[in-house]
Length: 338
Image 1 (tube, rainbow, N blue to C red):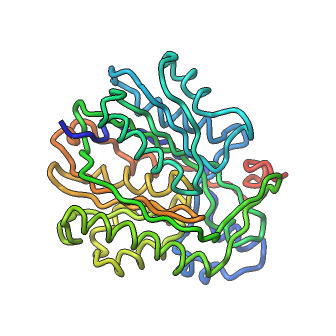
Image 2: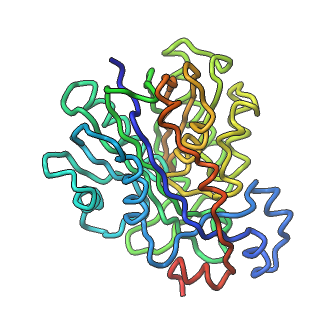
């Protein structure tokens, strides 16, 4: 039996704020910003929501109907509820999965959860556990009037890895890492800093290209072997550009490009693109998936859909359409800035 993703869940906050409403506050040209970022609006969690509450929602969805014991619970986030105290054990208690599981929180900017996914795959393949829950959840914050304010969003995705009845089998994975400080937040500092244009070519593009080219070479695949491709979405432009550079078509990535409506939910961003694609994938079709995390690194995976996807697929587009727009003062309250 091949290891794979046997179940998944997601949580998208109902609130949205338009890029136009943020731009108007600062006297910026809305069309210029929307065209530059490829983002029109973003999802915003309420003041009562945080990375843990959203993780509970997505994990509860993923756990429905699951009978295999969870042997590991990994929680990837850039916005933990405690500086010292794991979110993974709190989530395990809320999900009532018992006590015999390995738990830890992970960080690596926006690829914290995909690194944890590799750990879960290894534990299942080595027969140490039967299944593992991997969570990506963030309430991404940005300094007001910073470029990140237009894209930093909220959301959560959870996946369960196992061997029994997978909906996606994992054909292989590869990582590409380096010390490239394009985005950071020091201890005690509320908002992150970034290297502006430096976050592009030497960071996002170099690392995704590195992981994707390596996994394609290792598994002897080419871009045309895939029906879909999913790349981390810090904005709406980067994934389109990196796809073209690597030989993937617009048709292959368009189902995953939810960033224009949801923004960049950091650790959950790439996985949001994956679950959006799972609404359409058919048995036997392959998906190329690549995350990116500042600092910097990328994890690339090759997935193949099984017959079970037809029974277990979720209608992500319906959840995206359930939204309520808020104004800028309400947004500030939701993010606890005021």
